[in-house]
Structure formats: structure tokens, C-alpha cells
Image 1 (cartoon, rainbow, N blue to C red):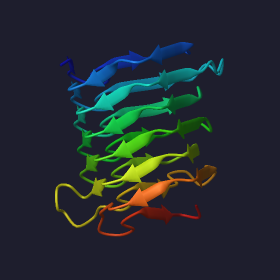
Image 2: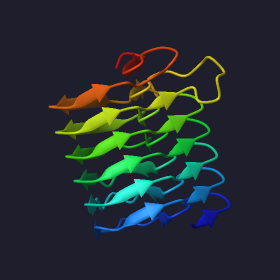
Image 3: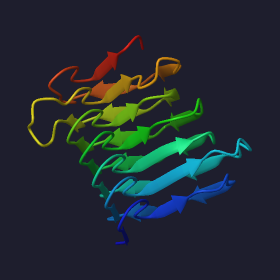
Length: 193
């Protein structure tokens, strides 16, 4: 039950960390802007790794983007045997918002479920880099939670915001079901993705 007026209601990472969290939860946190549960912004290029294993990132809220996680970083992020669920964002990425840099977010045996966003990417919004889902569950997410009729990608929205951005989403053995959006209930891709 933590609150940040701006970013990172639960965890705020601003330097290239080597962080491993095994077990535990980031729950019921809120941020006035980005990253209700976790906010990360790294630009140095040192690229250590951040790992959440057997963790729960749930019931968090962001006023703008990344209800569960806001990732603007060159550092890779791995979630294994974890849950990112029941998070809400007023803007994009109810569960996860990935923006900037060509880094990788990997979800292994992880559930990205029951997340909500006012705009695009109920489960996740990817605007750069690589999102790899392996043995994962991408279900029951909602884009357009504010009913403004402009939400894309209930499960996943992949959209470039820069002409030179390279974006990839790779899914292997992923359950994708019961996601809802105005366009692309499960998946939405735009601008040459």
C-alpha cells in the first residue's frame, strides 16, 4: 500500500541495477503518473539484469502508463513463475508498458492477466525492443477501460512511436483468451510492426 505522487508507486529504479526478487509481492501501490508497481528508467548502457521470480505484481494503479510495470530501460527484465495481474493504467499498458531502447522483457511461466487500461495494451503495450512470452498466460485483459472507444490490443498492443524503432513480440506456447478491446481483442499491431 505505497503511493508515489509521480512515478514508481512500489519500486523506482533509476540507475542500472542488478536486482533479483524471489517471492513476495508488489501489491496495491499507486503512482500519479507512470509505473504503479514498478518504474524503471536507465540510460547508461551498462545493462545488468532485473529478475522477478515467483513474484506477484498485482492491484497496482498508474495515472498514466504502466499500471503494473513501466519499463523505459536498456536493462533486460525477466519475470518467471510470476503473476502480473489486476493492474490498471489510465493511459497505455495496464500490466506492462515497454518504451524506449531495444531491451528485452521476457515472461517465462508467467501470467499477464486481468489488467486494464484506458487506452492501448490492456495486458502489455510494447513501443520498442522485444517482448518474449514462453509458457505464459495472456488472458482476461481489457483495453479501453474508460469506454472512450479508442482502446487497441486487449491482450497486447505493439505500436512504433519512432520511425527507426525495432519492435518484436515472440510467443511460444502461450494461452491467449478472453481479452477485450475496440480493435484487436487479443493482439494489435500498427506502424509496420
